[in-house]
Image 1 (cartoon, helix red, strand yellow):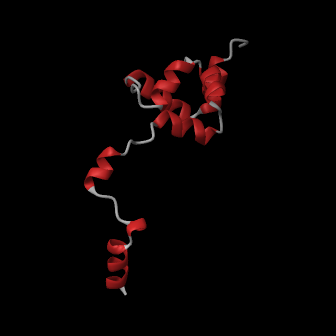
Image 2 (cartoon, one colour):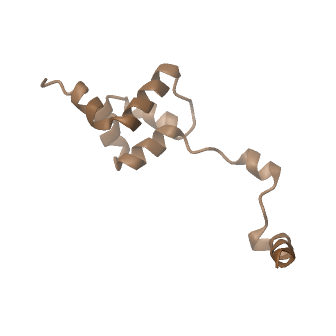
Length: 93
């Protein structure tokens, strides 16, 4: 059975396994995008709620630049405790 699977996987042109070169060309999904999507926010809403400039968020998500260490720490806090971050940033308190 395993031989059939291996043969099929290596001979079907539409389902060829990724090569090392293919893997190197692929880009990781930036963490900011994963966090934003997990929370169900649009870019605009995430930017506004967490006071991150929209251009900066878009740069992170499109892999034009990476968040620095402080921004990465902030993103981790947002991922773990989004409600607390929103409350802390609420100017009415």
